[in-house]
Length: 407
Image (cartoon, rainbow, N blue to C red; front, side, top):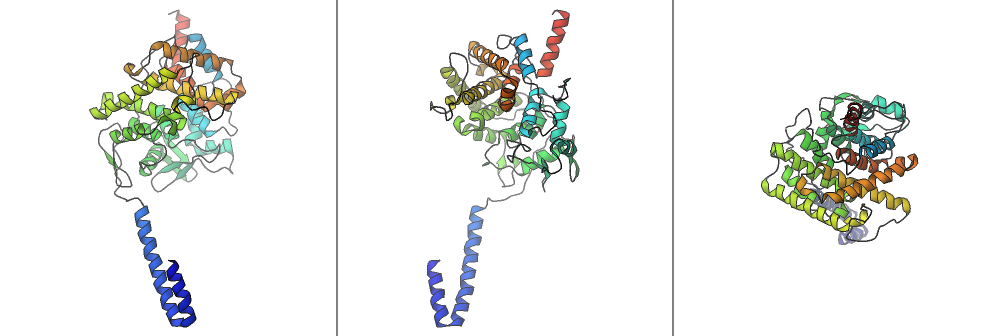
């Protein structure tokens, strides 16, 4: 390129005609180079073929009820501390979608600042409710695209924090694909969120654990589908992608991937979405993680970020950062174990120590600390509820009946 420019400079001084001819040739050359470069760097496109999905998502329930991990009284206290007391004045979207999957749609509270399950879902799928909370100058959370509807992400408190976390939360609480979605541009349904997620999906995106989770619940099939890049995708391939990354390279120390791998195992039990080799690879992978966690559990019962960072020291060793790291690591581990097949569990005393540590720490927290750390705490609270057999409202209802009847 430099030699071409030098030639043009010499031609301009000798002959205007030569300069003009050289200029045309240079522009043509640059155009060819740009076209070739673009064709190399641009992913190959192909015919998009979406999977066949069901209107109602699967419901995957916990199988255990162990009061040693968290007692009745401890769980009542924990859930009281972790009520979604965000109010309707600009509640953080990532708090809302985390709280929705934690509490479920049946959640109802007497205080007006504590959002019900239905209200939280409305904030996520109804732009008129979102506007009433955030004001008309706020960009919409939901944006129409040629393929469907995208959720605005990582653009401040009025946006989601993880790729397709909102969609997966809607799926986990049982939202049908025909459930109404209201945009500023008109009405559609939750199906449009799933269509956009799958149409926009590629195997190199930073996060795909929540996309995979939503897909497993709405489209539990072994049949492959084809991405917009022309790549065949099935749950075997998605599982292998999730297992190839080190925990330290994943969001929340890779625990979102571990949770989704567990759900793939559970869905596979009834729908055969994995081949035998992949299923065994997932079992081996999760068992290795369990063994690692057992080997480094603290005497008190918690873990922190160092379990996933090859023994390196914490990046931030301030008291609040240590607590946040411990809540995150311990809560997430108990959450995926609560849904996992029993053969993937550590010795029960390991989980008892972890659950008791979580319960004591949450009981001692003031409300300001709870709100600052709500997303991490939502996983911890959900984990403790799951270890008692269900989502918070289900467990609290059962405990109330048992208390009244003396059972």
